[in-house]
Length: 227
Picture 1 (spheres, rainbow, N blue to C red):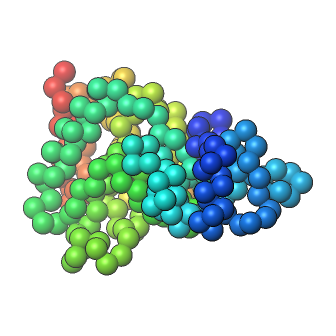
Picture 2: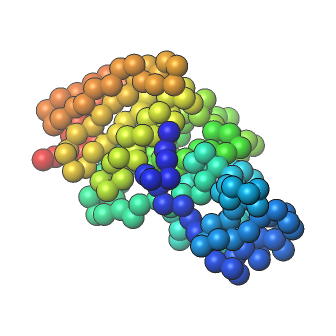
């Protein structure tokens, strides 16, 4: 599970706090703003646990802007670490690679929220979703729709390693952690009891069979690019 030590909570200013009250996102009483955090007035100063509906409304109201990169983790709105050019290169490469594979069998989503429940909506770098008749226009995609989740990590490596627990708990069958700095891909499969029971690291020149891609053999160079 991600902890506050591994994440950066999104802080709010007074104007945003008042705006949330005006819109009914926050109750009229029972909460306060302390050093940018919205806290419950319960004697312990517990941080407010945001729901997915809260998260969406904050975006609709412009309090969370389109330019911000955030995700909802265990009821906390967390800022996503800024990415470098190598991260962008690998995400672009993977987008092309995964998009070329499905041929109508799956949908590739890039850096979009995947709603797990009322308190969790992580934003993986890429998700391969099983095909849906209207491409999820009529409902939100959930973890049960995900064939494969991919996180590309440079400065976010420690956090993305811990996300394996979150994805395993959601029973996502396959998770790739692409470590840009070490030029490796850590493949997680077979989630059981909230953890992946089969985890292997692959370097250039190696390959693996992807369950999420119907048993396709994947070469590390297809994910990371040539050396």
